[in-house]
Amino acid sequence: MDPSVPVLLVKVGYYPLHHGSVGAVRTLGRLGVPVHVIAEGRFTSAAVSRHRAGRIVWPTTGAEPAEHLVQELRRIASSLPRRAVAVATDDEAAILLAEHAETLSEHLLLPPVPRDLPRLLASKHDMFQLCRRYGIPAPESRLVASRDQIDEIVREFAFPVVLKNSEPWVRLAAPAVSRSTVVSTPQELYELAAGWPDAPYVLVQEYLPRSESTDWIAHVCCDAQGDIVVGFTGVKVRSWPPHVGVTTYAYSVSNPELAALTARLCKESGYSGIADLDWRLDHRDGRYKLLDFNPRVGAQFRLFETDAEIDVVRAHYLTFTGQAVPAGRQVEGRRIIVENLDVPARIAYRNGAAREHHIPPGGKREFAWLAADDPLPGLVTAARSARPIARRVVARLFGGRPQGM
Image 1 (cartoon, rainbow, N blue to C red):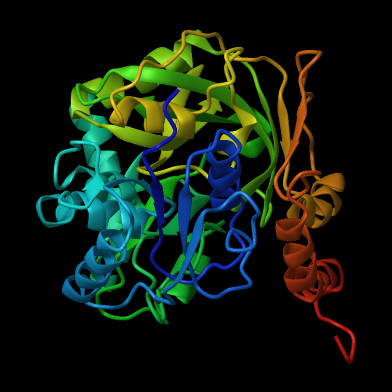
Image 2: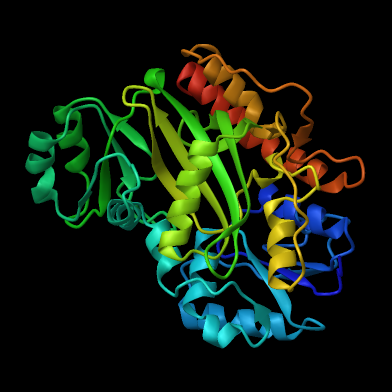
């Protein structure tokens, strides 16, 4: 491959520990691609990787006006030696790149995704509407735009239900629901809603019982026509926070049915670029139901690779620099472990009901942070995450934290 075209990792918001960014730097940097990292500071996980070619310190919150973000991003991109392939590492960045592609494409190579599609896919409510349009199974959902709708929700939904922030890409100062929350009874819902603003924009979603379902993930890279260049499927075993957070342990296994369902959604919607999808297999009716569509690189993308050593980031780079993507099959049984988060996740899952997982043999273990040829991201992560993780583990185990922590 020709590695001469640079890459710019584009982020919006504050998350200094992000193993997806580290994975992107490593997978391209090891091939000689010059990867330039936008970072909150000099000592963030991706910024200290030995495989990065450049580091641009640009702290943002995600609340800045789009015009300001576009202006600064143009300035950053124009400072690179040549037009660069953009890789979005969060939903906000993916939305910004798509909605301002005409302005940014002078300095960045961007997938020709429809302008409004990333915003629609990142929104829980709009994604549900798209699923209905294209006949994709998804949990029944309803947007609560006013507290007056609570009576209607209680009449029409079976409890428990799940509450989610409808627009998770917006880093709101005080969202009505900060993360996915299971509500067991109508009375509990009424009590929570009493503290919501008049227009809460909370998504109420059908609850899929964990004891009767399995979490799956799909990662794809689509070309300009919406066809999948490479696609992967795997099983999510653990996450942090438990059941609702980022994947901490997963393994790869081919699933032709899920791959076909993912490919149909991408093709019919016209999606182009990298995507990370969360699915849940409902064993009660045997259907895969879409929970999330992240229109950007997933944090755990290094779980997946073909036998030609192609992952979604390498495929994206080759596709949008006009190079051929080597043919290959998904490697079965690869596992990813997010070291700092899987420790508390193991503790949390130890006491819950566990579904038997049959991991195909022979797969390699991929660590999110540890790498013999790139030790600094792991050291930075260990230093920055030790105390917060300890606080959260103690809080979950004992309902509080001891003095001095």
